[in-house]
Each structure stands twice: as C-alpha cells, then as structure tokens.
Length: 79
Image 1 (cartoon, rainbow, N blue to C red):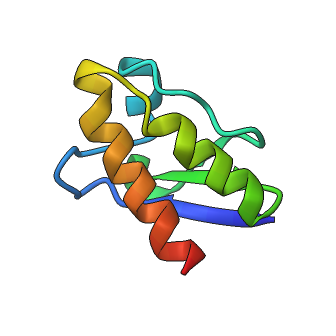
Image 2: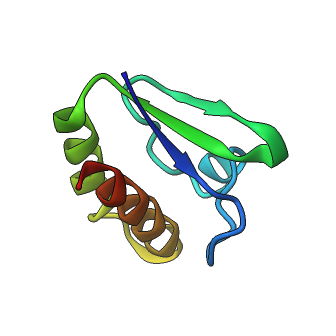
C-alpha cells in the first residue's frame, strides 16, 4: 500500500474536504483524513498512483490547480 500525503498548507490549500468541494476524482483505494483536515491518498502500488496522476492532469478549469498540486505530491513520492 502506498500513501501520499497532501499537505493542507500548499498553494491550493487542498484538504480532505477539497475532494468534495472541487469534485476531484477519488483515488482507487480512497482517501483518509489526517490531522488538520490533511488528505492522505491510498494506492495499491506505484502504477496505480501513476495512472491516477495522469487522470488528474486532464482536469479542467478550477480543478486543474488542485489537480496539479496533487500530481506534484505523487511524483515526489514516485521518484
């Protein structure tokens, strides 16, 4: 299992609640909320995380900024 933590103090202020507010796609294994409404994305493996990141890169409009921040967090983990 791979966990990707998305800090809520980033430029887009992404939190667990942001996934509902921005109608962001949910990762295949879900999301859990950590302290301060921080979101932790759950994946089975790196390939699943990569596929999810590719999906986020296609987001339009107001979702794009939040999606790009999540993609950056995933890519940092996959390096």
